[in-house]
Image: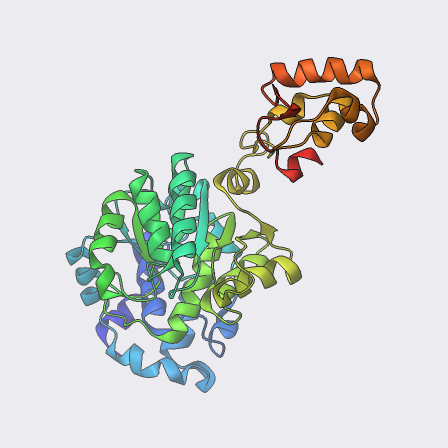
Length: 385
């Protein structure tokens, strides 16, 4: 066992944050997030007891961490963290987001890079996730939602990936808002490489967060583990586009398991990219959202973020009373007709026709020509119903 591993077990340090940080960093560096074999055996234990079990391979139950424990160099991890301008946050710190404590297996610690304060940024926030191979519709919708929600003071949390993630982060940045990228790799690795510039912008205007030590490569299982962080950091998750089997669905599942609000954006029924949101709405109780107002009402403060009721734009036809509507429906479009014929066609009295023709002419809906009366413009059938 190397000196770093032994040093974190000194009894005289057990009450200090430095000791807490050391053992949590050691656990994060040796135990894979969401490890289904080791983590259940560590659940409920204080970090010092947990690390003692892991580093000694107690009962032969932590053998898969042995190689990492032998190679552990805590000082090197701390130095690398400082080199990239990141900081370490652990439970009990003011910056620790309380939502992570709802997880069955919370992170041992977090590597955080950026100008914002993590706990504050998560207070009024929303996770936005979706397909990497997003459609033009999906990227437009996610960008507009992120922009509008940012303007309303929401932090946008996503995964820094291509597609919906990228559009969501960019929407928040365009609004001058805060955005958080939760990563499935070390804080010193930009992944995907094509988003290096975007991640740098996020650090300047928000945060990059990970539970993995510097140098950790992105791996498939780490993306799935990362998704639970995205769900836990915020009060709710919006799925814009996703396949029936996707990482975004795992984020939605985690959000539902945590009791977080879950919303989904509908799309064309012919689009495989919208099959996931449609199933979430149909089978999983996800709220259907279509614009910023609906998202803010669902995820915001009760009574303060209410959406205006949606109403169709009023038309000139709406202002007519029932006899005048009947008269307009009976009126021809091309050739004119007489008042007497209109009375028969509309089933109105001569007086009602006379009064109605004056009202329709005044509203610009009817005109008198040589052959009689006709409409001046067509009123769509859906407005006449």
